[in-house]
Each structure stands twice: as structure tokens, then as C-alpha cells.
Length: 115
Image (cartoon, rainbow, N blue to C red; front, side):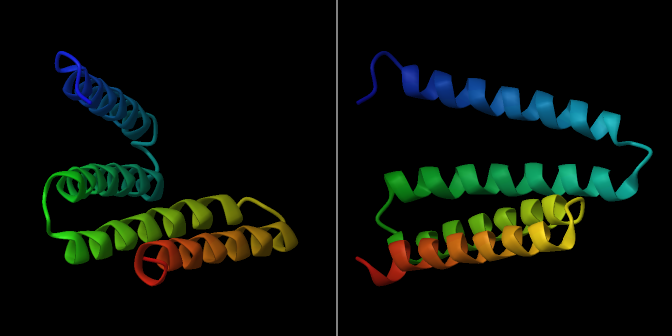
């Protein structure tokens, strides 16, 4: 339920906060190309994910949109898991990867198998 355009306002505020945070993170990592690429890539994936989630809510194109949402969330999970696992001890890094794989599998099950 949309009361007085509140949903659109919150969406725009969220996107503005994400953009400002990403710009600041990109600026802080400007001397580290890997970190800058990570920030730019994560921002792009978040924006695409927002687009497809809105499309999923508004349109009847469920099958292709669900696949896009799952692929983008899988990409984000892989990106963040890799960043976290590389700074952890190997045993903890393995647990991070196992948890990420479990979440990707659970997402696939929830979106495609368990209708």
C-alpha cells in the first residue's frame, strides 16, 4: 500500500544513500584498483537488482525476472564472500564459502523449485 508516495520517496532516499556511500567508498579506494572495481561492480549490481525487483513487483514477466534476480543475488553473494574469505584464516574462509553456497542453493530452491 502506497500512502502519499511514501514508497517512491523511500526508494529514492535509499538509492541516494547507496550512491553517496558508494561514491565515498570509491573515493577512499581510488589508489587500490581492485577495491575500486569491487565498489563499482557492487554498486552496478545493486542498481540492476533494484531495477529487476521493481519489475518483478509490477509486471507479469515472472520467470525471466526471477532468473535475473537470482543471478544478481548470486553474483553479490560471490563477490562479498570472496572479499570476506580472503582476509580470514583458511578454515574460516571455507566456512564463509560453504555458507554462501548454502544461501545460493536455498535461494534457487525458494525461487524455482518450491513454487
